[in-house]
Length: 558
Image 1 (cartoon, helix red, strand yellow):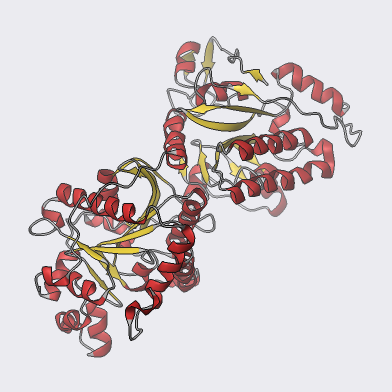
Image 2 (image 1 turned 30 degrees about the vertical axis):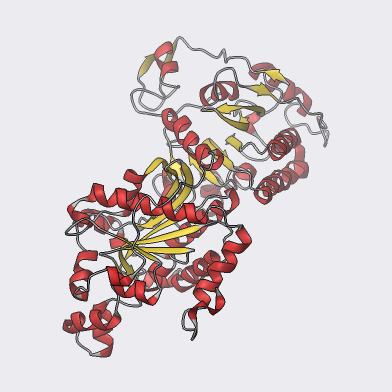
């Protein structure tokens, strides 16, 4: 191994090809080689990228590996060995990827960083073997594996041997998955072909730089092959974010902090359980006053009631939102990501309604689509892989009832989440913070402990829907609300919730800060209760909890 040297590819002046602004070289370097005029992110050498991301003085380059230099005896306009020698001379690198160990904001990582200057960052046996070796170092040390990609695809001069590297690198990531080691990729411009279809898009968390082009077939190939007009922004990072394939588009200056937040959640120390509860949870329904059910429904739906994002911002440190279901899109009605709750790393997921009309429309009034539930499931599986407790915040009228949701498998998505949550080997705490509507709520509420705010409701259907179906009159919703016994007092009596969190006088909306502190204390105390329970026992008890509903003796399965 050797110590990484600082990059030397300095420029005196930089002329941006996008906006044509001329920038003095030192200013250009201070801006991390992002155009100050238009924000265009230029390509970086591997060494400069490593210097930007990893802590100074922490970097050690992994030993080089010996691989066949020319497995096919290939020649185009020049023999392949000559082309490789030229790339080495021009870049000062042995291959299109540089693999190192180091720290990022104090957290140990193994990093594999690609350099597009070296034969277009193409994937050949040298790149594949170096990546596989780096992954084995990550597996041995359990340090997260960070990939920074920039590639035109597989290396043609190595024929099918280059194709096989897609499998080699993919199975290396699979081994890290099986071992519970975090994997993260930063996709930079461009990332195409065999690299995009293997290790670039498989990690647990995928960030992309603004404007980075990502895809399997490039635009020119698509246009020439099928003569199809491409939409604006096609294959850009922003295009892929909207379609659920990346977690975030992160400007270069924000990459280190964003990566640091994710690493902190994966590697942070789990605090010891605190002595006693930090907030008094109500466990006896007799301690709660009887209230008019329809009034409680109005309270739970109050437009000024704090949202999931309000609670996240108040109760969590280092929150990093993760987006996308990796299948079809990103649903704004469900938000989630990693953070620290009183120092404890957690995965938090919740329905997001929004406050004013514009926000509520943007978040579909908290009614999730299949993409939302699949995103939630993806984050839950990541939490299980990393051993993170899961906190879910429930606040939805129900799952989205539209045609598109049905076409994309709404029932399948909800069912999959319910099944998934019954078997996750990490603590799960759900809190109904507002409205808990039907299966759309349950898809986030199969938990070891279910809490509810005193002004929350939780029901099989909305009172209006119940009245319309059973009495053919939505105006009888108050009568239906009383019959459904959906308020916190009745839910606690039924055992649907395990404890009730008191609200400030007049409701959570009257004092959102106090409500957030009450929720923080309740979640922390409840996670403390679950902290020392073995994973197998968590699953067994959780299944017993839900299996007992409807049994004559509810405690028979405990």
